[in-house]
Image (cartoon, rainbow, N blue to C red; front, side, top):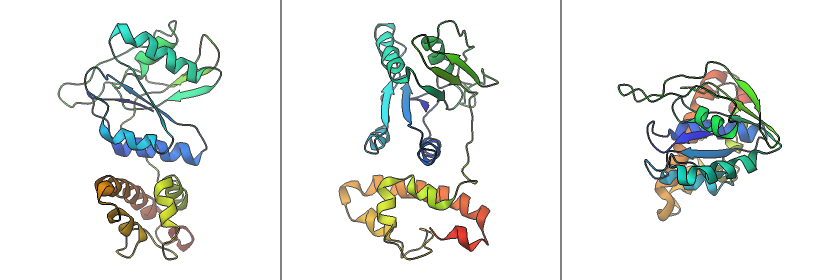
Length: 221
């Protein structure tokens, strides 16, 4: 999952949706934060590490970029990996570093919209020099989970799933009586972060449940 520390700003909701899909499909996710010489890694990224998600970084400084790319290459070696993320975050630039012969077109962020310009129009698989494959994909601006079972989405939030197990049967996790509400306020030092995590879960469930509305077997979580 490739995100930029700035320009464009990282979108937590999109990262959460990518991670949910990865966890459900038993795919090992890694977050690569680019442009760390432009802005520091957002504080909320630390919380992904507590879930076992590895976070790697790159900058535009030539003095450190070679080592940063080498570290990423060592993790991807002998595996099949796919890069996903918004346009303008540096996916194609990273591909060119990992596979020098790829010569993927790169682009900048639109000054007016703040969004990246599409430079890759199709997915392509490239062989890594030291073994393995890397798949470059077009930048996306939306990624939905409406096709996912709500139970699977909850399980993709390990810190919340443990608490949600104590909820009443058929709890949608939007009710005032939901056990997750008490979990949020149980630790004042983590209340803000926990509330953000819960809001992210609820926003994903709201989309999924709206699709499954009327199907009782899918609404109990």
